[in-house]
Amino acid sequence: MTLQLRWGARTDRGRVRAINEDAFVATAPVFVVADGMGGHAAGEVASALTVDCFRALAGPGSAPAEDVLGALGEANDRILEHAASSPTARGMGTTVTGLVVVQNGPAEELLAFNVGDSRLYRIRGEDVAQVSVDHSAVQELVDAGLIAPEQAAVHPDRHIVTQALGSNPPPRPDVWFIAPAAGDRFVLCTDGLSGEVPLQELGRLSREIEDPGETADQLVEAALRAGGRDNVTVLVVDVVEVSGDAGPDESTAPRASLTAENPVLPTDLAGNV
Ligand code: MN
Image (cartoon, rainbow, N blue to C red; front, side):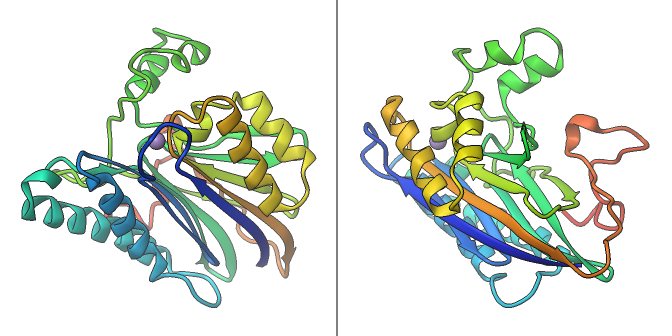
């Protein structure tokens, strides 16, 4: 199975922040967004270091899945090194959310990963779903059944992430396979989109606009119209064609569905992060 993709990307400083601390790479087979945090522009460094590690995987064909995990570990190390080198950089970190075409046996498949509260959505026909699960204080409250997802969106603690790159001990990324289908659209974004634009509006624009670059533009415009209180980054990745033999069709799940039958990591990758 071979995937043919089409994509578009857009980032914007927003209407309030002085600088843009988001970063992204959108070059096949690697699609990654990172939302940096830390004072004195340290967040900008953390997100840039992270996408640099992933940019190294861009090139013809797919990327080895181990290299994706390697890039996550390398980014964490490089941020820690930088943070140790300067007092103003202490505590710097970044979220990271990505989608990478990897080889899974004879087939190309999509490997998704997430640390923090940037997000991955999938649009398949009428269905619009958030497929990443936030590492955030409010997600923990939702998981515990203490608040509803709608309450999480307006909760005062909604910006508190519970995992980030640049931490010691290192974060435990969610890493999972997605079996792609022709026509699938994936939206990767920082919370400057998801915090400003309701899921219903995100889904409507993603279903109505055909061109991925135009979709990314319009999603960012929607975030700016809603207030643009944060940096906003949007990647739109379309699976145009799936050719060749069907793959193993073994989608796995992020940690939300963690059970013995449904491990958080593809078993052959567990332990490498
Ligand atoms: Mn943000």
